[in-house]
Length: 288
Ligand code: GLN
Image (cartoon, rainbow, N blue to C red; front, top):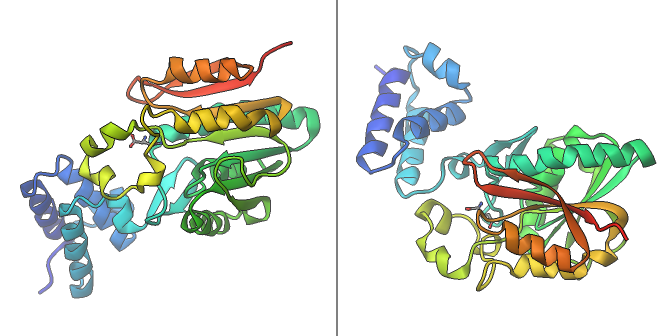
């Protein structure tokens, strides 16, 4: 006789806990829900349902991957972010809930531009899965977006995600190092660039260090390389009345603000993340 869902859940949780995973219960629940296409509530309500042998094998294989510290959503290949569902690939950073704060921060500026002009163009530098651009496209029908990335594999994933979320007709991609191959001007430029100080990368959790692409994490010797590249090029690509929205590392508010202030921009808004750390900065051009 096949085992019940609650028995398989308990066993998976025990295997994960034994392997030292801090959130074994959540990990087991999310993995099983994802693999069996059930909601977290259904998992609890259908505790007595039998688990078929092939499902059991898929669950065991997924638990084994998690024990090697592969993140739960990488195992599932998908993750929900703000208003979109995103496929992940080895070339893309797994979008973090904190980055949803950047999406929220740009809704109002985008709507203000659209109220004035009827439409708006957005550039997402280092788009990865497309998370920021695609969530904003989903929220704002009058928006058009370009996703830029150095990694062709990331752009492929971003295009697939645009398709999956029904916004592909307003999304295009450019393979580029920051502004090098970008053409035209934008009303909004956003980025969650690599911002981890190079020396710190070796100390990151194995879940991040071994599975998120290094290109999406490594911010150079002081973590600020990407912000310098963006600040030095932005004048040629941002509209006079445009806005810049950036995710930053927890200790980078002052240094990034100084970089953009030197480039002629003023900090108009700053937001903390769910852990209370500085995480999102919004800039506009300084008044003459
Ligand atoms: N927030 C990510 C982390 O701390 C880093 C993302 C980035 O460098 N942009 O793992």
